[in-house]
Image (tube, rainbow, N blue to C red):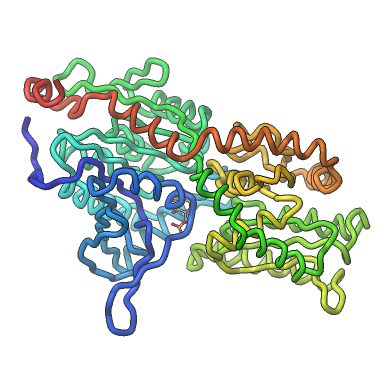
Length: 493
Ligand code: G6P
């Protein structure tokens, strides 16, 4: 088989390609690289997958700071391969095209997407750089797993460079309906980029269906159910499958963490520090306009105003971890949320008691587990969310079968988490009723609901997710559509 790119002799059988490395790298005062865990659901989900691949696995991604050229390094047995982004790349590819064009477009245009040709140029350029880095690391006939909306062109670029590979792509965020996707000036190129993969995975069946419909309308390729035929009737003919693989968390590890005496003690301490309120409500999100933080805080403020919740005996802890702070829509959101929180505390607080505890910070896993355990009601009110792993973390932490989950129907998690109190976050009156219901839920009912939630979350963890995706990908012969089928037969046979 002709491979237009040098295949490394000591290549990796599994190469993950994601915008971020699982660690944020920076240089300390002496110029030595140091790292901390990166934010977000993707990294949380993939850490155990990489641990499973051991020294057969490599991860290609950005270290999280601009203009940082670093050599590959090993963390927990896998090779991390940093891709350098210049300041201009960060502005145009990451903050621009990924997070000010695609992110709002794919989340129901909650914020208006910006379309700029320079950003698109940067997106193509950076996607090519990621594809080249992966092509340099993958073993002959190896598997490359590309992740998320920042890298939708990588599958096609990579197939061009290395037709011998098996290429999977997983989309962690929603895939929008055709009517919204069609706004993108470069919609056809994006679809063609994704069709470079053998398997395109989504969170929900509805996302996969949206994608197939987009393929049907924007290309003249044949589709049969969820399978698209590319290069039909040519020696390059191959099939691309679209399917749903709902992502999860390392539920058992989380369950165990929350059972440790330290976390249990910390949960009690948190309640005590908050003045042992009768009701403790919790929100945990990246500070992002898709998460419905304003809607949630507004509903809570009105419940205090109406006297349906006691301002002196109730606390809402809202953890809002800093995110994408150079993007205008995020700066605006921060101002709005902080204004609202300030108003509620101003109107309903007393000396020594604030009804909203707002924390614009990130916390380690142990502290998160303690917060989940301390909370009577967890509020996940996203306006649109691919999955929402916070909802699953809350459930995994509740080995006491207590607590109630209020969950937006616009999250991928709502498809799975039967037992949650579902809400439409746009319906403030309905959300106020749901919060009140959850706060006053009979222990018998909340136990029953929580047991059902836990069966699902503990029965389908992130290991099951990645195994299902990789099994479906491995079922595809490597090098599909590469001209020399003879050699492929020898290698796979
Ligand atoms: C979501 C996305 C991830 C992203 C994470 C954090 O979970 O699906 O791809 O990494 O948010 O966002 P950031 O822009 O900080 O990487």
